[in-house]
Image (cartoon, rainbow, N blue to C red; front, side, top):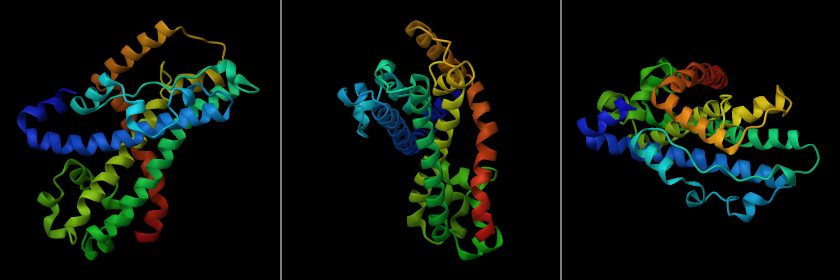
Length: 259
Protein backbone atom coordinates (compact mmCIF):
# COMPACT_ATOMS: atom_id res chain seq x y z
CA UNK A 1 0.00 0.00 0.00
CA UNK A 2 2.85 2.39 0.82
CA UNK A 3 4.36 1.91 -2.65
CA UNK A 4 0.95 2.63 -4.17
CA UNK A 5 0.57 5.85 -2.17
CA UNK A 6 4.14 6.88 -2.98
CA UNK A 7 3.13 7.05 -6.64
CA UNK A 8 0.50 9.66 -5.72
CA UNK A 9 3.20 12.09 -4.57
CA UNK A 10 5.96 11.12 -7.00
CA UNK A 11 3.82 10.92 -10.18
CA UNK A 12 0.32 12.29 -9.43
CA UNK A 13 -0.81 12.21 -13.09
CA UNK A 14 0.29 8.60 -13.47
CA UNK A 15 -1.41 7.76 -10.16
CA UNK A 16 -4.79 9.13 -11.21
CA UNK A 17 -4.44 7.64 -14.68
CA UNK A 18 -3.94 4.19 -13.15
CA UNK A 19 -6.60 4.81 -10.52
CA UNK A 20 -9.27 5.47 -13.15
CA UNK A 21 -8.70 2.10 -14.82
CA UNK A 22 -8.36 0.36 -11.46
CA UNK A 23 -11.61 1.82 -10.10
CA UNK A 24 -13.57 0.87 -13.25
CA UNK A 25 -12.19 -2.67 -13.14
CA UNK A 26 -12.87 -3.06 -9.41
CA UNK A 27 -16.39 -1.65 -9.76
CA UNK A 28 -17.18 -4.22 -12.44
CA UNK A 29 -15.80 -7.05 -10.31
CA UNK A 30 -17.39 -5.99 -7.02
CA UNK A 31 -20.83 -5.09 -8.40
CA UNK A 32 -21.17 -8.38 -10.29
CA UNK A 33 -19.82 -10.25 -7.25
CA UNK A 34 -22.39 -8.77 -4.89
CA UNK A 35 -25.19 -9.13 -7.45
CA UNK A 36 -24.26 -12.81 -7.72
CA UNK A 37 -24.72 -13.28 -3.96
CA UNK A 38 -28.07 -11.46 -4.04
CA UNK A 39 -29.33 -13.43 -7.03
CA UNK A 40 -28.25 -16.78 -5.60
CA UNK A 41 -29.89 -15.98 -2.25
CA UNK A 42 -33.10 -15.00 -4.05
CA UNK A 43 -33.12 -18.23 -6.04
CA UNK A 44 -32.57 -20.17 -2.80
CA UNK A 45 -35.66 -18.58 -1.24
CA UNK A 46 -34.32 -15.51 0.59
CA UNK A 47 -35.56 -12.17 -0.81
CA UNK A 48 -33.83 -10.01 1.84
CA UNK A 49 -31.25 -8.62 -0.58
CA UNK A 50 -33.89 -7.99 -3.25
CA UNK A 51 -36.12 -6.07 -0.81
CA UNK A 52 -33.11 -3.93 0.16
CA UNK A 53 -32.30 -3.08 -3.47
CA UNK A 54 -29.16 -5.20 -3.67
CA UNK A 55 -30.36 -7.36 -6.58
CA UNK A 56 -28.89 -4.73 -8.88
CA UNK A 57 -25.73 -3.90 -10.83
CA UNK A 58 -25.98 -0.24 -9.83
CA UNK A 59 -22.67 0.54 -8.04
CA UNK A 60 -24.44 2.94 -5.66
CA UNK A 61 -26.36 0.00 -4.24
CA UNK A 62 -23.20 -1.86 -3.28
CA UNK A 63 -20.42 0.61 -2.51
CA UNK A 64 -19.17 1.16 1.02
CA UNK A 65 -17.84 4.73 1.54
CA UNK A 66 -14.63 3.71 3.31
CA UNK A 67 -14.12 0.69 1.06
CA UNK A 68 -14.44 2.97 -1.98
CA UNK A 69 -11.81 5.39 -0.64
CA UNK A 70 -9.47 2.47 -0.03
CA UNK A 71 -10.10 1.31 -3.59
CA UNK A 72 -8.97 4.65 -4.97
CA UNK A 73 -6.14 5.60 -2.62
CA UNK A 74 -4.83 2.24 -1.32
CA UNK A 75 -5.22 -0.01 -4.36
CA UNK A 76 -7.70 -2.39 -2.69
CA UNK A 77 -11.21 -2.02 -1.32
CA UNK A 78 -14.49 -3.71 -0.54
CA UNK A 79 -18.24 -3.35 -1.01
CA UNK A 80 -21.09 -3.64 1.47
CA UNK A 81 -21.86 -7.29 2.26
CA UNK A 82 -25.14 -8.55 0.80
CA UNK A 83 -27.68 -9.10 3.61
CA UNK A 84 -29.09 -12.62 3.75
CA UNK A 85 -31.37 -14.48 6.14
CA UNK A 86 -30.45 -18.20 6.10
CA UNK A 87 -33.74 -19.07 7.79
CA UNK A 88 -35.51 -18.12 4.55
CA UNK A 89 -33.58 -20.65 2.48
CA UNK A 90 -35.57 -23.51 1.02
CA UNK A 91 -34.45 -27.06 1.81
CA UNK A 92 -30.93 -27.71 3.09
CA UNK A 93 -29.70 -24.38 4.54
CA UNK A 94 -26.06 -25.49 4.54
CA UNK A 95 -26.23 -26.31 0.83
CA UNK A 96 -27.96 -22.99 0.12
CA UNK A 97 -25.30 -21.11 2.10
CA UNK A 98 -22.60 -22.84 0.06
CA UNK A 99 -24.33 -21.88 -3.22
CA UNK A 100 -24.70 -18.24 -2.14
CA UNK A 101 -21.09 -18.11 -0.92
CA UNK A 102 -19.72 -19.48 -4.19
CA UNK A 103 -21.97 -17.35 -6.44
CA UNK A 104 -19.85 -14.20 -6.34
CA UNK A 105 -16.60 -16.12 -6.80
CA UNK A 106 -18.05 -18.03 -9.76
CA UNK A 107 -19.10 -14.79 -11.46
CA UNK A 108 -15.64 -13.30 -10.91
CA UNK A 109 -14.05 -16.36 -12.54
CA UNK A 110 -16.47 -16.06 -15.46
CA UNK A 111 -15.60 -12.37 -15.88
CA UNK A 112 -11.88 -13.23 -15.72
CA UNK A 113 -12.34 -15.69 -18.58
CA UNK A 114 -14.46 -13.24 -20.61
CA UNK A 115 -12.11 -10.28 -20.25
CA UNK A 116 -9.02 -12.41 -20.86
CA UNK A 117 -10.53 -13.56 -24.16
CA UNK A 118 -11.40 -9.94 -24.99
CA UNK A 119 -7.81 -8.94 -24.18
CA UNK A 120 -6.53 -11.67 -26.49
CA UNK A 121 -8.89 -10.70 -29.33
CA UNK A 122 -8.11 -6.99 -29.08
CA UNK A 123 -4.37 -7.71 -28.84
CA UNK A 124 -4.49 -9.20 -32.33
CA UNK A 125 -5.32 -5.70 -33.57
CA UNK A 126 -3.03 -3.86 -31.15
CA UNK A 127 0.36 -5.32 -32.09
CA UNK A 128 2.02 -5.40 -35.49
CA UNK A 129 1.53 -8.88 -37.08
CA UNK A 130 5.17 -9.85 -36.56
CA UNK A 131 4.80 -9.62 -32.78
CA UNK A 132 1.93 -12.09 -32.64
CA UNK A 133 3.50 -14.46 -35.17
CA UNK A 134 7.00 -14.45 -33.66
CA UNK A 135 6.38 -13.96 -29.93
CA UNK A 136 2.94 -15.52 -29.64
CA UNK A 137 -0.38 -14.08 -28.52
CA UNK A 138 -0.30 -16.00 -25.24
CA UNK A 139 3.03 -14.36 -24.39
CA UNK A 140 1.95 -10.74 -24.86
CA UNK A 141 -1.05 -11.22 -22.56
CA UNK A 142 0.61 -13.51 -20.00
CA UNK A 143 1.14 -12.25 -16.44
CA UNK A 144 4.53 -13.97 -16.48
CA UNK A 145 5.94 -11.46 -18.95
CA UNK A 146 6.46 -7.72 -19.03
CA UNK A 147 4.22 -6.65 -21.93
CA UNK A 148 0.81 -6.90 -20.29
CA UNK A 149 2.03 -5.35 -17.03
CA UNK A 150 3.47 -2.41 -18.98
CA UNK A 151 0.13 -1.91 -20.73
CA UNK A 152 -1.82 -2.19 -17.47
CA UNK A 153 0.51 0.38 -15.88
CA UNK A 154 -0.14 2.84 -18.70
CA UNK A 155 3.28 2.81 -20.35
CA UNK A 156 2.40 0.77 -23.43
CA UNK A 157 3.13 3.44 -26.03
CA UNK A 158 6.22 4.64 -24.19
CA UNK A 159 7.78 1.16 -24.06
CA UNK A 160 6.38 -0.55 -27.17
CA UNK A 161 5.34 2.30 -29.46
CA UNK A 162 7.25 0.94 -32.47
CA UNK A 163 5.53 -2.44 -32.12
CA UNK A 164 1.99 -1.12 -31.72
CA UNK A 165 -0.01 -0.95 -34.93
CA UNK A 166 -3.29 0.50 -33.65
CA UNK A 167 -2.80 2.80 -30.63
CA UNK A 168 -6.54 3.48 -30.50
CA UNK A 169 -7.02 -0.11 -29.28
CA UNK A 170 -4.54 0.31 -26.43
CA UNK A 171 -6.98 1.76 -23.82
CA UNK A 172 -9.42 -1.08 -24.50
CA UNK A 173 -6.72 -3.72 -24.11
CA UNK A 174 -5.59 -2.02 -20.92
CA UNK A 175 -9.10 -1.92 -19.44
CA UNK A 176 -9.90 -5.52 -20.42
CA UNK A 177 -6.56 -6.80 -19.09
CA UNK A 178 -7.02 -4.86 -15.85
CA UNK A 179 -10.60 -6.10 -15.43
CA UNK A 180 -9.54 -9.71 -16.05
CA UNK A 181 -6.75 -9.40 -13.47
CA UNK A 182 -8.98 -7.74 -10.86
CA UNK A 183 -11.68 -10.39 -11.21
CA UNK A 184 -9.18 -13.21 -10.85
CA UNK A 185 -7.74 -11.47 -7.79
CA UNK A 186 -11.22 -11.08 -6.31
CA UNK A 187 -12.02 -14.75 -6.89
CA UNK A 188 -8.80 -15.95 -5.24
CA UNK A 189 -9.04 -13.36 -2.44
CA UNK A 190 -12.59 -14.39 -1.54
CA UNK A 191 -11.62 -18.07 -1.47
CA UNK A 192 -9.22 -17.43 1.43
CA UNK A 193 -10.88 -19.13 4.46
CA UNK A 194 -10.90 -16.10 6.76
CA UNK A 195 -14.10 -14.47 8.06
CA UNK A 196 -15.90 -12.53 6.68
CA UNK A 197 -14.66 -13.72 3.25
CA UNK A 198 -16.67 -16.21 1.22
CA UNK A 199 -13.91 -18.77 1.68
CA UNK A 200 -14.74 -18.98 5.37
CA UNK A 201 -18.35 -19.94 4.55
CA UNK A 202 -17.18 -22.47 1.95
CA UNK A 203 -14.73 -24.02 4.44
CA UNK A 204 -17.35 -24.06 7.19
CA UNK A 205 -20.01 -25.63 4.94
CA UNK A 206 -17.79 -28.25 3.30
CA UNK A 207 -15.27 -29.16 5.99
CA UNK A 208 -16.95 -28.24 9.28
CA UNK A 209 -20.44 -29.16 8.03
CA UNK A 210 -21.77 -25.74 9.09
CA UNK A 211 -21.10 -26.36 12.79
CA UNK A 212 -18.82 -23.35 13.36
CA UNK A 213 -20.91 -20.17 13.66
CA UNK A 214 -19.37 -16.77 14.39
CA UNK A 215 -20.98 -13.66 15.88
CA UNK A 216 -21.24 -10.33 14.08
CA UNK A 217 -18.48 -9.01 16.35
CA UNK A 218 -16.20 -11.85 15.27
CA UNK A 219 -16.87 -11.01 11.63
CA UNK A 220 -15.96 -7.35 12.25
CA UNK A 221 -12.72 -8.40 13.94
CA UNK A 222 -12.04 -10.74 11.03
CA UNK A 223 -12.53 -7.86 8.60
CA UNK A 224 -9.94 -5.78 10.45
CA UNK A 225 -7.49 -8.70 10.31
CA UNK A 226 -8.12 -9.09 6.57
CA UNK A 227 -7.46 -5.36 5.99
CA UNK A 228 -4.22 -5.51 8.01
CA UNK A 229 -2.99 -8.58 6.13
CA UNK A 230 -3.90 -6.89 2.83
CA UNK A 231 -2.07 -3.68 3.75
CA UNK A 232 1.05 -5.67 4.70
CA UNK A 233 0.98 -7.51 1.37
CA UNK A 234 0.58 -10.96 2.93
CA UNK A 235 -2.70 -11.73 1.20
CA UNK A 236 -1.28 -10.21 -1.99
CA UNK A 237 1.53 -12.77 -1.96
CA UNK A 238 -0.99 -15.59 -1.53
CA UNK A 239 -3.07 -14.28 -4.43
CA UNK A 240 -0.02 -13.90 -6.70
CA UNK A 241 0.96 -17.51 -6.05
CA UNK A 242 -2.41 -18.61 -7.50
CA UNK A 243 -3.00 -15.98 -10.19
CA UNK A 244 -0.12 -17.00 -12.47
CA UNK A 245 -0.92 -20.72 -12.76
CA UNK A 246 -4.65 -19.93 -13.00
CA UNK A 247 -4.08 -17.71 -16.04
CA UNK A 248 -1.71 -20.30 -17.52
CA UNK A 249 -4.60 -22.80 -17.64
CA UNK A 250 -6.77 -20.33 -19.54
CA UNK A 251 -3.96 -19.53 -21.98
CA UNK A 252 -3.57 -23.17 -23.06
CA UNK A 253 -6.21 -23.01 -25.84
CA UNK A 254 -4.96 -19.57 -26.90
CA UNK A 255 -1.43 -20.97 -27.13
CA UNK A 256 -2.65 -23.93 -29.15
CA UNK A 257 -4.31 -21.63 -31.70
CA UNK A 258 -1.93 -18.66 -31.92
CA UNK A 259 1.30 -20.00 -30.44
